[in-house]
Length: 245
Image (cartoon, rainbow, N blue to C red; front, side, top):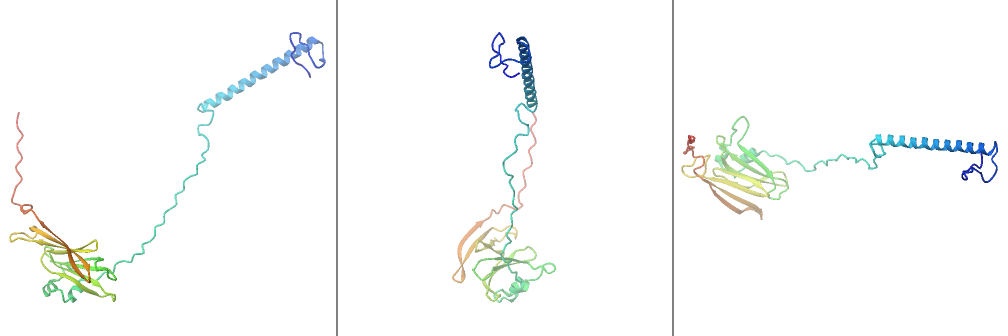
């Protein structure tokens, strides 16, 4: 079968004799081979079509619907660690004990300083930095039990030995002191002759700043209140009846 090639209409061969039969047999054998080769080509074409059909059934892209494997790394979340606070808690003081042992507190305030209910005294205490001392300063406000009106404001500065010294005292009706950005702010209510306790005519707001071992006034604001508000002397107008067409 070696050397079989198509050479034209005569079916001749080149490059050697054809063995195994006459020239006609060689031609027929060549035709058989040619037919087998054509059949093989057809089968190969059908296989290609089958593969194409399978690839189209997966979505028409020739690849799997899932797509190629991802190459990006998965982000990992590292749990954050919270650094514990190193700030020391502000030591609390016995405000009532400070007031009763302080000679700068008037006898009237010390006498009237009694528990309102149980062992609860009418005393508010604030801690903060006012005088740049070795520890937090203490602002103490004393009020009445009945209507909670302030009667005195005191500031105590800590000493290095743990004791406290009175560096500010004001005693008058409706006074209250607070700490605001390192300054002492004292508010006093202003009452007229006919004002009720709940409705003052105005207020004075005074800001004190610590300098040269003492407090000095830095700012003063006076506010006048509307006396008609809360007087209870007016009634709301009656709603008008809807008009009839």
